[in-house]
Structure formats: structure tokens, C-alpha cells
Length: 115
Image (cartoon, rainbow, N blue to C red; front, side):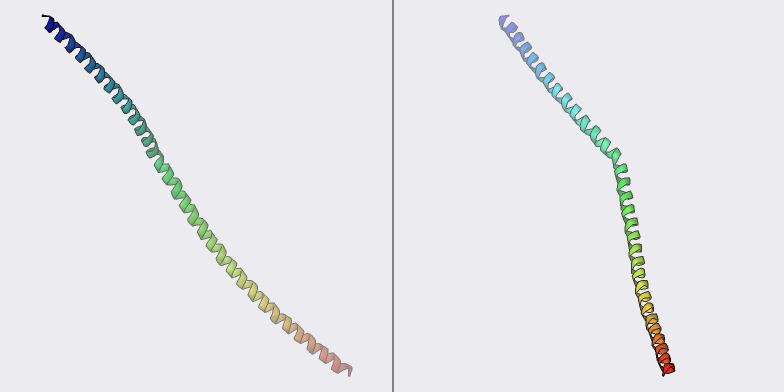
């Protein structure tokens, strides 16, 4: 009878140790589940922000393209302006030459009239 009591006590101790081990494993599993849930929540939040970030990036690309287009237009206008200034400078030089020619002709006529 004593050996059965000892066996029962040993089985009870083994069962208690196993129960304690299972309880520890259950606590560890629950802690891991909580960590994974936190990671899942963080990932979900990032996914929700993704469309907003994508929209902001698209807007930035459109703005960049618009700015590049404006810059191209400004460069074209500047080139046209430089060409207009060059043409005006050439015209002014031609008029200056004509004025000088007329002035020289008038000086010759005055000289001829004086003589």
C-alpha cells in the first residue's frame, strides 16, 4: 500500500510539474501572441498610411513635372527674349549707320553750300 501511495504522490508531483510547465508555456505563448498582435497593428497602421503616402508622392511628382514644364517655358521665353534683343541691337546699329550717313551727307551739303 505504501508503494502505491508513493506512486500516487510521485504521479501527483509529476502532474503538478507538468501543469506548471504547461502554465509557463501558456504564459509565454500569450506574451508572444500580444507581441505579434502589436506588430500586426503597427503593420496595419502603415498599410492604412500607404495610400496617403502614395498620393503625396504622386502629387510631388506632378508638381515636379509642372515645375519642369514651367522652367522649360521660361527658358524658351528667355531664348526668344535674347533673340529679340539681338535683333533690336542689329536694327539699332542699322539705324545708327543710316543716321550717321544722313548726317555726313548733310555735312557735305553744308560744306558745298559754304564754298
